[in-house]
Image 1: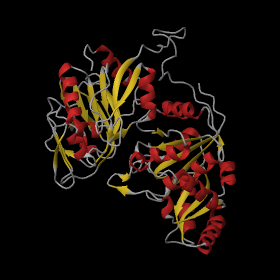
Image 2: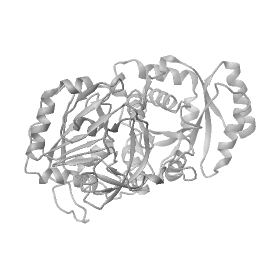
Image 3: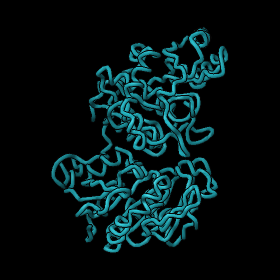
Image 4: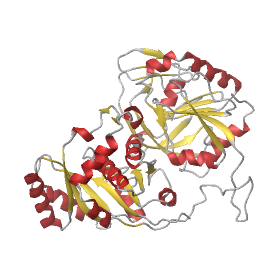
Length: 476
């Protein structure tokens, strides 16, 4: 059990695009600049916002998802990351009450607030409203009394007078304090593209951004009031997700102890960086020695690797550079021919295929380990939670089920062959008609899939992946 002594708060919004990320990052940067240890989190499965949150706070942000992960595990991961933090700051997802469906709140910021017993700071877009904003806040306050909204932040105010009009209306209607009013500011804005904000990995050259965010928050928010609104965090018991420290074998409590290490190569560069920190820590806890390599710039795989992991990212943005690095293509083909287990998610699937056609219609040769091609032409966004049954992958034996999500604009040119697919969707939380759809591609020791999986979704996922690598007789 991780002992937690800090205080926590969820920053939620009335809807997507209201400015939750900017507000949360500004708060995190300002509190960190004051010398506080800030642990950031993101509600839901998003990979992009956590990168910005982590940079603002100065430590990796964690994802907390009450649909993909068992509820006790969510509480454990929250407490595990917060054990040495002064402030736990959670950015919500979409609107406060938006979850996996129109009537279900699983996966929502509200559900997370109830689970962790955290108060909510509500961000409201004031750009085209005055007194009516109080009706919006009042509706959120009354919609579910079990969710404790404790304060409001006004975003995109037009002037000091505008901010005061909104503040007065909200206080009179709801009694809630308005702890700040933020004007529009290009100095603290991020560029966007087809899947949301441009990832932190591609904009990290702006070294002055955290300081600008901190100054923005200090100028426009009452941070002392915010800290008073945050509440102490309860401890969560261990679920046994992580093995005990020590040599391989059961300890006195019957838990499996930390196994001997096995080398696993992991793609990490500007094109591939969609990984949950807790997933990587689970892999390491179960014995993985994670060795980074770059499909963009590297020419060889880490020596001695018995498994290869390629996460998601934006290979479509870097398709030309990825295609030009034929040395890495050949290194991966040699590893696959030797039987090294290779697992690719989303962007990893696209790279492991034969080719990728970008948004301009140019076809780029990829690594060619899987008999498939991906395209950005004539596609639409695939987004949502998925429950999937495995056909036999490094994560799960055949017939076992896992919860995950899809998040991509690309598509395979030809539908997956059921005989070589990786998963079958057993039901989609926001699209029940998708049940039965097969997904992904398997060829020899190589698996590629659009399904993103958090390795804490089941207690055996990380253990299975590491065991697959350890059992391999082949290595790089």
